[in-house]
Image (cartoon, rainbow, N blue to C red; front, side, top):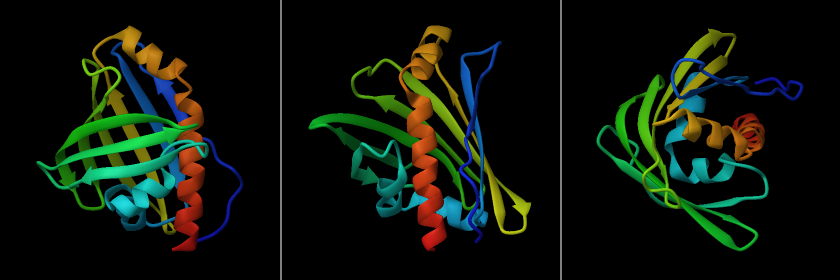
Length: 161
């Protein structure tokens, strides 16, 4: 794995449906990127902004499994949970995502990993929410910082092997 300059995730809002798309490339094989998304001890190390610590309460990453984690920021705890609907090794994860502070706001998320050659992987993640207002609130919440800092931490984790 080679070291690269800081790279930003491309985050876009679909104009026709309440969907957010994130595209990011990693200097690591897709098996490694998949493992970092499916093993709870690895997920806790990279997910979210640097100012947050994560505690995984449940992480059964298989088709039909479920998950829950808590992010701690400045002493405040924020819980998130969902279900894994489809998990295909090194290729695809489809899950739901709910913030406990807004239990009616369920997103359907799809993560696709593509081998782009040279030991590199392109991640494409989509989050479909129930309204344009919900999508725009997601974007306004500082999501971009959390995504980019989280993926920077993932780059560091992948570089360590």
